[in-house]
Amino acid sequence: MYIRITNRLFFYQQIFFLLLSSWRISAPPHIKPRHHTYAGVQTSTSPYHLTQGSQRRSTMDHHKEEHDDLLPPSGSNDGPSFPVSVPWSEAGHSSSSATLVQSPSTAGRIRLGRTLGVIAGLLFGAAVTAVLHHVYLSNLRGRTVSGQFWIKNSSNALSTLVQWLCMGSISVSLTQLIWYLLRRRPFTVLQLNHLFGLPDPLRILHLASSRRLWNAIPVITIATLLQAFSFVSILAPNSLEVGSALPENTTISVPTALFNKPINVFDCSVTPSADSEKVLSLALQSETLMGWNAPAGCGTACNYMIQYTAPALRCTELAIDEANTMLNVSTDSSDRIVYNAGSGGPFITPMSITWRTYDTNRNSTIGGTRCSLWNTTQKSVVSFVNNTGMIFPSIISYDSPVNTSLQAIIVVGSWLFQQLEGDLIRLEPEDSDRTRAYWYPSIDPPFKLATTNLFSLNETAGTFTPNSENVSSALEQILVNATVALITHWDQTTMVDASVAQDQLVWVYHVQRLWIIYATALAVTAACGAVGLVCILKNGEDSDLTFWDIVRATRNSELDAVVEGEKRGYAGESTMLQYAIQGRDLEANTSGVFVLARPHHKRSRSMDMGP
Image (tube, rainbow, N blue to C red):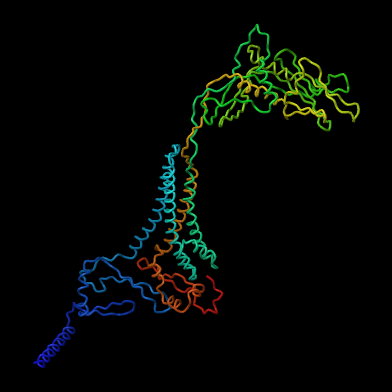
């Protein structure tokens, strides 16, 4: 039984193989074996093989166009091996499953536009963010500071976002520049390590210290600029500060001088009261102004200006001959008049003042001036900080000579003339060993020049010198300072507009600081973007530093031999590589591979080659 069954199975098997052989020999004309080449290896597809792959084919019939990029190593050193793009429709698909294949030029244009869009889009985003930051800080300007945490951090976040967007745009441009140089210049393996590691700061330093620095100067420049963008998020937030609130303009009551009291015809006294005379004397003798306290409503600090009408001297220089004539009135040849002042009438008649100064070498100088009393318009610029005031009085204009209608002006003018009039005579010694002596004529009123700060007298040294280079200007300033002292004494007030400081903190926004940083950052980013655009156009395609791009660029058997035959350190220092392109046909794949830039030498012949 067993032998019979075995014989029948063997018989059926022989019939099956005969039928199969007959079918393969006489296959219909529409069923033919297909041949495919993968990396130089030829394969055939028979109906039997088609039967084995029918299930896999049926699951892929719904797919659209797909390509399989094969990356075989080169079999020789004659040139690099480039990828072969094989549609699936030619590798086993039925005719019904074939779809439209996109041309390489169309795909390249799509990718090219995408890269340029990334560069420009990031730059545009940085510019928009910078404008939003400006608007945000402008709205904060002048507002009271209630809390700093969220405001400061939000401002820092916006500046950091501008930094990131600019750095992202420059990074893409830097990548295009790297591939541009790789296509045109040879680099050592170590330099390639550093190039593919950018923008790491350590990689920049390694490139800058390499022996073939000139090869990578453009890349080093842009990579360094990229690192410098960290200052954007450091400097830009400094445009927002906390400061004092702007002063508020308000009206306050302040002291002033009012010389508007008419003279009493029955009051023949033209001398100041005891208190007023004391104030005037202190003002005449003091080198500093006698000011007043801060007025009510001034707060911690305020600034204002008061304007008033007050008397002042107007002086004109005398000719030397005229001054010399007034000084040579003594009949004794040993006497010298060093000071002479007097008026031709009572009260406010113009006064002539002459002087002869002596220095330590007994050299004399003659001078003189004629002063009259005028109605003037004066002002005082006043500033108070914590009740400490600074007053700057000055004469705005000389209006008219003083008449006798206002008692206050007559009193002040007469008092000043009494302080200035009189004579001072210098007694010359009979011999050089005798001590010099000065004496004062007995006149009424007594000579009071020593109480002023116009001249300095030193009897021991025998000098008489002015305290000011311009005596006329010093005389004109006497009543200006005296009027300020009277403002303190008289307690007269007026209403003025004052700038009063506010006792609160507000946000202060410095526009110029922000835009100096942002304008510089955006300009540098735009310039780097232009460099990236030029590199893309020159390369004919955009590039990246992804793992896939590196793998595609290193599929060369020459590189395999270098890696297998040398140690990593020695190969990195001695081996020069350059990225080679097969062609520039727009319809062809323009990607290339790294090839040896020159024949690989032994260690003994290449010890002098550096990175």
